[in-house]
Image (cartoon, rainbow, N blue to C red; front, side, top):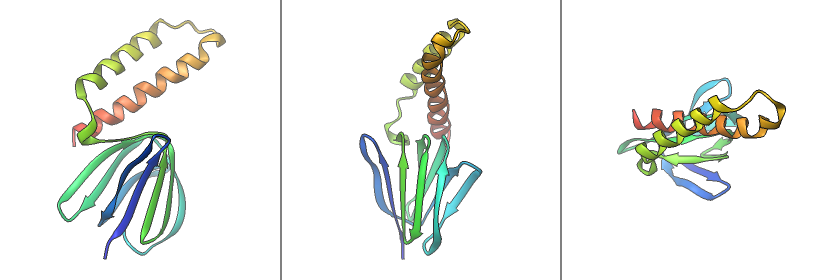
Length: 135
């Protein structure tokens, strides 16, 4: 028996396949899902997803979203998801550094709030992607 896992982002399907277990970054902490799990709708935060198969573990970085768990199926709806194999470490490090530099140079005024939020999101997602690469 297996668990059907689907991870979907606004850009499309990031992952789809049968897995033994998935460990997700819930808003209250990590939680694992095995087949025949009780139905639950759980909010997710930025974090690392561990996808366990017979061949070992795959890792992915996800941003905010939800996991809909129902027995033999888990559907993850996330703002973004990047599988470890698709992460360009030097590109992520550069994007993080540029965002941190721009954040440091922004003024405190409300007119910068939207840009500050965007840059903070870039830094947060970069940190998660770098964590995925360390696995």
